[in-house]
Amino acid sequence: MPDIRLKAILLICALGVISLFTWLISSANTALLIFSIGLLLYLISHIIWLHKLHLWFKNPELTAVPEGSGLWEDVFTALLQYERNNQRNQTQLNSALERFSLATSAMPDGLVILGVSNEIEWCTPNAESQLGLNLSTDKNLPIVNLIRESHFIAYLYNGDYDEPFKLKSWRNTEIVLEIQLIPFANNQKLLICRDMTQLEKVEVMRRDFIANVSHELRTPLTVVGGFLETLSDMEGAVPESLKTYFAMMEEQTIRMRRIIEDLLTLSTIESNISEPDDSEIDMHSLLKSVQNDAIGLSQGLNKIKHQIHLEADATLNLNGAQEELRSAFSNLVSNAIRYTPNGGEIFISWTLQGEQPVFSVRDTGIGIEQKHIERLTERFYRVDRSRSRETGGTGLGLSIVKHILIRHQAKLEISSEIGVGSTFSAVFPKARVVRKSVPN
Ligand code: ADP
Image 1 (spheres, protein in one colour):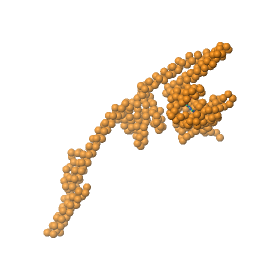
Image 2: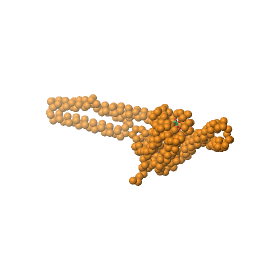
Image 3: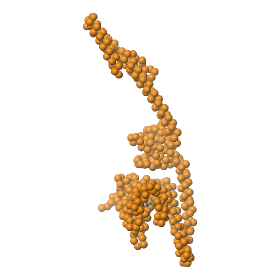
Image 4: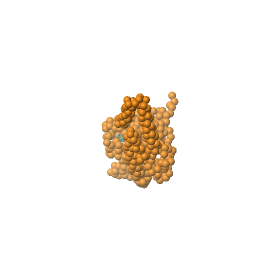
């Protein structure tokens, strides 16, 4: 404020000039007295204005800003201007916040903002009703104190928020919620919660329909298959000219039975919302038996058609459902055999990558074009229909694998190059690792 400084200097200079003039016409003592009295009055006036400023700060009302005089007039005018701007900004901020709050309340999804220690900082009314929270009493409480569901706690601490997470409301088991966490800023999280009850009902109806149809078809097909087999086995029952048709009928019946079995397996896994039975699996012996089955599958008329290698970390075990995982691993290995021409190699491995245990199957087979990779786990998606059919495929294998892995919080990663081969890897969370000591 250069003008304020200038005013103060001018005032003191004027006092100095008056004192000098007094000295000239009177005496030095009188001049000094006038100068001192002037300075004292000047100081007292500042103290009075400072006191008024202090009083105003105690109750900073816009209408109560003192008017001031002299130097202080400028100070109080600037203060008034500052306070006006401040109030205008505050009003704008409040109305923006109000509009934001109205917009978030109108959203069908619930929103919760979590702080660095996962404490509730703020949430919308929808989140309050969906998650049973009460912002006024639950603010600053850790969310795990209020949502005690073990899957939710695991999802929160796992740190992998790519996929949303389904949660059955513990207050009303009819309600299914989908929860997605989105990290932002410095270790804060936005929790989005969506009511999926209606969609889930439709999904359950779809699953039940497929399961019922498959179930209904299984019995008649078993009967047809049985009769075809009996007729084929009976000497002279099938005329020579019809034998090829009979063989085709038998082959197609077996194929349909395989599809129905896979559909039933898939719907059982999909509808099984209970946790997989978590017991320690001796991975080395499980994979040895998967390798032996693979050798059997690769067996031609008189020789094994593929070289099948196994490299498994004998100190690394896994917590999970053994039969489900055997089925997933066998599916991946049998695909590798079916899509690898004779003479090719299959490498099965079980290792720790970083902290995560990984089961992977690499083959030197036909490979898959990049554009197909992300759709491979869809039901009945095949790159080459005829090859899948010729090798006894149902188009459901990778769907089954995906669902088994989801149940174990694992991910399926696929990389492939046409003519070079493919690698299918099941990446498990580190929480499933069991380290065992190997006797020397
Ligand atoms: P299918 O019974 O047809 O093999 P899957 O669900 O197991 O069905 O696999 C889906 C498709 O993925 C297959 O039809 C095939 O085109 C492709 N596929 C799976 N594994 C491999 C592999 N190891 N090499 C090349 N293609 C593969």
